[in-house]
Image (tube, rainbow, N blue to C red; front, side, top):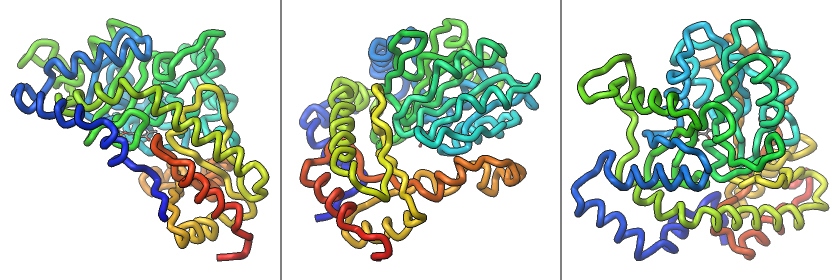
Length: 372
Ligand SMILES: Cc1ncc(COP(=O)(O)O)c(C=O)c1O
């Protein structure tokens, strides 16, 4: 048997025949861009997340770009974000001429080290972008506190964490609804994924929402009357219809991911060379990312591959080490550097069976260091 990282065919097979009917309904309806499906999805996501304003858009990267534009950040403004993530947030900043300031990570959660953030604030800092990496909530209590103290905007990158919850100021909240703007991605492998590209932007501010909508529509509040330079960033009707169907099952998807994580953690507890991710309360385990001790991550990965078990390295290089951000190469971000050499993500999705988990665990627990 082999075990893959994800099994989207199985997720979608479980949704039949409604899935095909839903797509056929859109095809027959003849409205493919910003029709009823997108509007309904925006409302339903708003209800699920308890956030008043939601705007669907083309993907998670554009969601972040639009968020930065909506806050009227200007070239030279500094934005603090994590170096240990997918590149989208840093890229969106660079594209707009903003100065990215990379923060190191908390080695236990792999999320931005909230204590570091305050140290990096300068008079030019305008915003913080925490990423809820792998589905694990960032330390929002502390980040919000720093943002209040220094009057900074907070844009949450919740691309890997749709449905993740965290307690902030004593209140339980879904991530993406805590800062000024939240962004997510509906890339197929995300907690809530479509069958192509998609994303969404959340806010509690009507004014910001209006700006987000304008920017996402060529900077035009009224059709063919642009008041500023914007983007064309749309979620289409077919993707929205698919997402509406999957949104009805999101709590089940999340609870299956958490169930699989619990089983992995229990079965791997005695494994000396593997450090499992923390099981925080609201974690949705978009990824199950372990740390491999003793410098043997790549050997272990090769062994798992030989046993037919897929793994991934998220991320083999922190962003500040990638050539595009070459001018940051000398910045000392040791925890992120260390993590990129030690992390290994195991198969994780809502359809993992007990047999598949047992197979992964058996391979991990039978591996001896030095064995290739
Ligand atoms: C943390 C994070 N942010 C942003 C994105 C960008 O989303 P998209 O691929 O939809 O542009 C991703 C996608 O992988 C991501 O993982």
